[in-house]
Length: 323
Image (cartoon, rainbow, N blue to C red; front, top):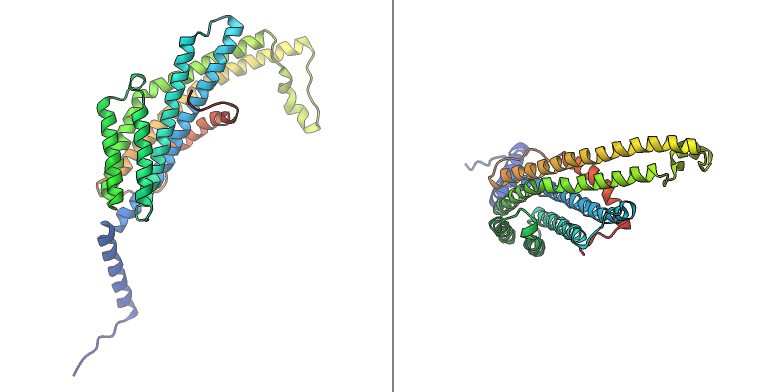
């Protein structure tokens, strides 16, 4: 007599789950790896965007510094000579290149996130080409990037493209891992130079602000806006004694603002470096087949974005392209 096995709903569900797991293993070397790779790509995209904004802020700061030096020449008679002007212009151009490099990295990370899509190979090739161009464009005489380090970065980019074209996520992760580590080290080497840009900006702007205050060349009316705005009134300060008192308060505020600018940038520098190192560590987990539990970008990018936003807001009124 033939016996038939009754397939219960529980057995059926187990069979489906087993088949799904097998399909994941065959298709991509493990669904967990795919999930981790997608999460890492998303986080790297956010981190690279933060790095783009960081460099754009420095670029804007240098544009402002060019204008501040012109004002300094008028107030103090300190010549703003051609060599100094050229140094600022060249440094600004280098910051623009770094911002473009970070932007290209963000685009490449997005291609990695879309590894299984039909357009990922083309997108990756285009993004990698942009990234390689930006790496190549860095002026080695004005950066701390060596020829060997640049070659390794370009080699890693090529590895990423090949792996994405072949839909090999772990190999792609290894290439991104190598590039991110190199970029993190590059940032750390130049970090003191970035800080010097901010220090110079704070020192010169503070000096000019205090001088203008002391010479009575500012309008203190804005100090009273908080009291008059609710009533639709416009301040108009004409009393010399009152102006002098407000001027002293404004000087104290300028002192504090200058100190705050330098402190905030030091924090942003440190947090950006931490963000890059954190992403390098997370991508390394994916590259080596280890689980990556965190699913949000490094929390440190928030401080970078907060610092950069005050300068990004100035971009519409300034020229941020290369000279």
